[in-house]
Image 1 (cartoon, protein in one colour):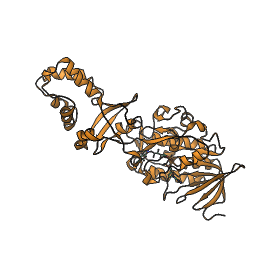
Image 2 (cartoon, protein in one colour):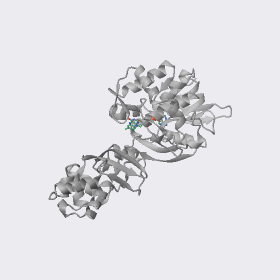
Image 3 (tube, protein in one colour):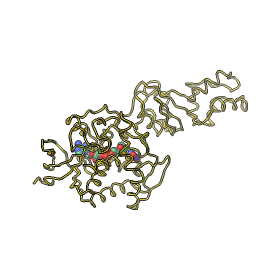
Length: 398
Ligand code: FDA
């Protein structure tokens, strides 16, 4: 028997994050002997840091439309079989108080620690074991359909192997590309990965024009590649952030046209025309400062818009001003990358997986769940809902 580990279990889950723990709970509930291994010093680090320490654990409006994947249909089955209401029922059973912040986003009233505690309690209740400080060094799959693992805590065998190692974001929290390596080794395609839900960076004159406004925030409608997100944008020292930017970042790639409606929900031309009638001597910059942060309005009029008394604008010029405010071009140079990204886009190609069970179509007994798979949610609790749902789907089959 190997030091610290049982010689054999039914299921090994690599990764004690959101998806891995949920999978262990579901598999343990079926009577499977489950061992969860994580190389980090504690479990669920991303849960702990999520939602500003309060974990935005689901979104009541979750639908397949909130996810990005090369196959938009793949997530449907798992999401339909484990819904936000199912997770809320677990949270309620553990008497964890929660509240809705906005747009269906549910957060703990107190701390994300309660979600990790709940998952560990549920895992313990079904005798699923969890080991930290354990690095998997080698995986061999033999003809008799068993997996043999060599780890830093010893060797062991299992019938089902579940890969729940997450994405590449925040390497300092234990993120690795190990799940992708396993996928490739067992003949799976891995789609190109990139940072998602991430601040955008600006460079050169585009940065110079905004940099000193760091800290200014405004409501915008961010649009790119046919998608639009209405929320706050925040100017930072390196570029732009805030929920509207994080959301659209998942749909943006360098060179893509990114536009912001700076006065969303407003017929800007109509509004400018009425201002012109009511305050013909007012300068554009002071009229804009009534509806935009003053410094931002001023900068718009220094760089992008000529500021003169409103009575001096002809109808065509007023239309040009309205058009710019409605589709202000934001020329980003890149993203802040995995260092600050909330998620990783791309990953294990869903073509090689069963959407019902998350099991490999090439290697029976091998499963991929959570963020390592090419399914990425919007900002707002969707990524955890995918982790719970895909973890549960695999846990019922592994
Ligand atoms: P997760 O990353 O949770 O777990 C993977 C586990 O595998 C980790 O414990 C890691 O240590 C382990 N591991 C990795 N490599 C390994 C190896 N080689 N050997 C052993 N173990 C290994 N989502 C959301 O819905 N609401 C929110 O509020 C937030 N907030 C948020 C904030 C921040 C700062 C980040 C970075 C991310 C979020 N997210 C989020 C996204 C969410 O955290 C993420 O999508 C899920 O945690 C993914 O769950 P997984 O279980 O797939 O991976």
